[in-house]
Length: 149
Image 1: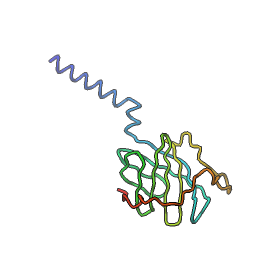
Image 2: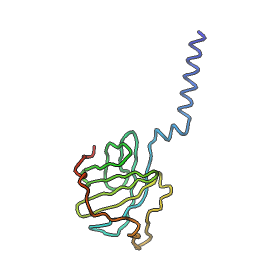
Image 3: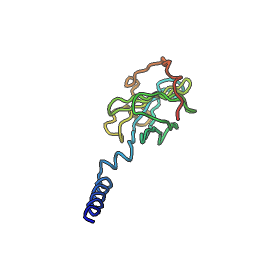
Image 4: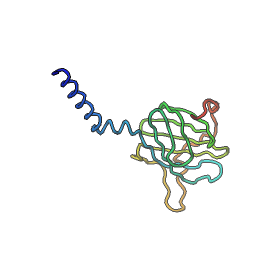
């Protein structure tokens, strides 16, 4: 009887810790990445855009902007879907995303929950600083490597 009581109490304490631990809740909720991007070539060149992405449970999906929903290991990856070719490059607390849509290339710089986002932003009709993004017009041969999903 005493051993059964101990197991019940231990299970309750452990369950309570997991349920009410704020760090566990964050890990379960995934990470929201927010930031701005710029059209660096093609139609709309110079325009700024916002993007919000969620990484959770081995997946990456957009919450705003062009649609993406794919498996994601958290590193550097390339995906293809109906929106175009996505190159994702994680560098610490920065998620750099480049979307190739035919002649149009969009570069995004995202931070977790938008914290510390120093990517270019515009006010009114003033274009973002195009020197803030490195323009690489070479499309890597690895772009044919992996469909989204």
